Amino acid sequence: MLNWAYPIAWPEVLALSIFFVFYIGFGLRTRRLAAPLGQRGWRLGWKLGLRLLYVGLLGAALLGPAYGLTQRPVRTTGKDVWLLVDLSRSMDAPDIAPTRLQKARAELATLITRFQADRIGLIVFSADAYVQCPLTYDQGALQLFLSTLQTNLLPAGATDFAPPLDLVSDRLSKLPPTATPRATALVLVSDGEDFGENLEPSIRVLTRSGVRLYTLGVGTLEGSRLPLAKGGHVRDARGRDVVSRLTPAPLQRLADQTGGQYFELSERRDEFPLLVNALNRLEGQVEQVRSVSVADNRFRYPLALALGLMALDILLTVRVIRP
Image 1 (tube, rainbow, N blue to C red):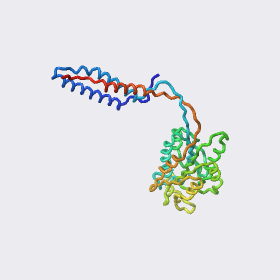
Image 2: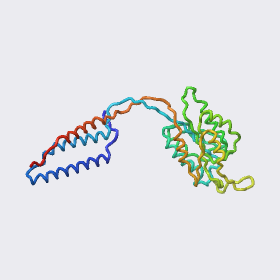
Image 3: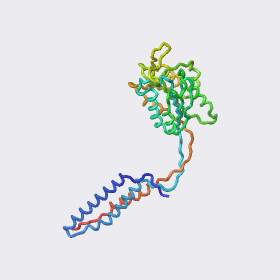
Image 4: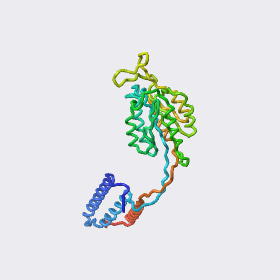
C-alpha cells in the first residue's frame, strides 16, 4: 500500500501555482512574438507536457512516497529523574509570586515536557515522604499529579530531607540484579529549611548507587510571613509572626556530596534553565536494541526519473521562430 510521509500543504500548492502562472506567461509571450512572423508556437506543446511531468515527479518525491516495510534496529536510551517536592507549610510563603510551591509547580511542568524520552517520577515530602507518581513515560498523568500538589496533602510536621532520599534508595535496592542500571537523577525542590538529623547515611547510599542529586532552592533570603487559609499569619509560641527564609546551605551541601549542582529560583535569580541544561547533559544509558517495522521511503525513484526528464528537456531544443 502506498503511503506518503508528508501530506500536501499550502507550500506545495503555492509552488505549483507559481509554475503554472509563469509557464502560461512564457507560452503567451512566445505566441505573441511568433504571430507577426506568421509562425505559431504550437511546437512548445510537447515541452509543456514533459515539464508538467517532471515537476509532478519532483513534488511526489518531496512528499515522500512510502511503499512496503523495512526492519530497522532502534537503540533506546534514557534516564530516570525523580522530582522530590517539599510540601511543608513554608512552601506557601509568597516571597515568590504567587507562592513558592505554585512557582515551583509551573517550572516543573515545563521541565517534564523537555524529557520525553526519560522516565520521571514524583515524590512529595515534609516530615515523611510518599510516592505521588511512580516512574513513568506518561507525561499527561505526571502533569495531572503535579497540578494537584498542595501543602495540605501531607500532615503538618518539620521538614526532613532524609525520608525522600531513603525512599529513592529503597526503590533502587529493589531492582532485579539482572536489570540494566539506568542513569538516575534526583531534583530536590525546597526552601532549604531542614529540621532532620544526620543525612550522611542516606547520602552514602545514594553516592554508591551513582545517583546525581540536583537541588533547587525556592524563596528569598529576606523571606516572608506564612499566611493562614482563614486569614492572618502563622505565629510562634510567643505570638510573633513566623518568617520563613530561603536556607541555601543544606541544599548546596547535598548537591556537592553527590556530584550534583545547586540552583536557585527567586524573583531576582532564575536558574531553572541551568537546571534543565544540567539534566540534559546527564547521559542516559542504553536499554536495549530492538527492530521495528518502518515504511520504506521510495522518494529516490520519482526524483531520479524527474532529473532524467529535466536532462532530456535541456538536451532537446525546439526552434519556434524560424528565419
